[in-house]
Length: 332
Ligand code: SAM
Image 1 (tube, rainbow, N blue to C red):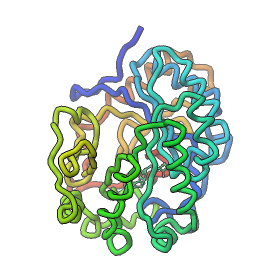
Image 2 (cartoon, rainbow, N blue to C red):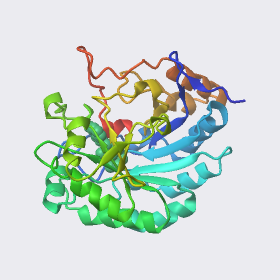
Image 3 (cartoon, protein in one colour):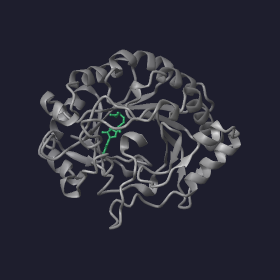
Image 4 (cartoon, rainbow, N blue to C red):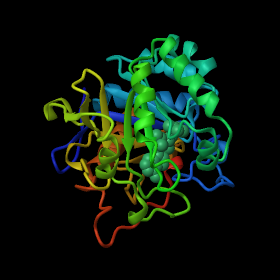
């Protein structure tokens, strides 16, 4: 029997983000310091079987309808195609998607498509190799672009692209990024930088806001708001570009929060349920699972974790405290 993941504010979580690893092969300035972080030791990480078991409980007992694999960088998880294939065998079959930097996707797009991957979001913040090197501290732009093209060629469509703009680095690139994506049929979404970096370097005054992003696109494209009813629980405000059908999205997590329609819940690579990116508490499913908890018991713990979800992320509250874990360890 399905008993959904409801909270006290009338929201129901149906979209499960599973972080498969906290490791990453890039060092994006808004996420991680150049020297990297202390990664989770492998025994702390859920095994492939444990990930699939929790995905099954989510789908069969808790009403999860979409599963997104993320990280860290999920393509670094060797078992990803197998985990995706086993997730695709769950009934009712969840929609399966991936958030990735696309390094390695040129090789993996075909196998992942065959495993059942339905959709992909690729992070691409710049088209300039030098800026990529400055922002991500690695010279991998060509690999990212090849991965994007491979995803489209493998039919993992629509290919979505996520871009974060950083002041003084790539904040002049919004029009070029949009043109690049429009030319290739990719759906671009800009994301406001959130206070989730391990270095705690986020400053509101440095953040490139949704308003600024739209202003920088305005001289180059005619943007008209899409029907807001089509947005549903999606975080992006969508605009038709030059009358459509092409579209661009802007995710104003900080200046235009959408917590009231949030339908997400997160499972970290070490088996903790987080009811919000910005939650300060987590609920441990890994240890009870390893101690022999039944599916019903794990589902109960999971439901209690979501029931305690706060009404909003609180970034704009005077007493806001950044969560202890950075984005890479939570799963973006
Ligand atoms: N490595 C994968 C990738 O690059 O897409 C998946 C994990 S990454 C944490 C997921 C998404 O979070 C990426 O689109 C990334 O740009 C975004 N992200 C990371 N830190 C962020 C921050 N501080 N503010 C806004 N978005 C952030």
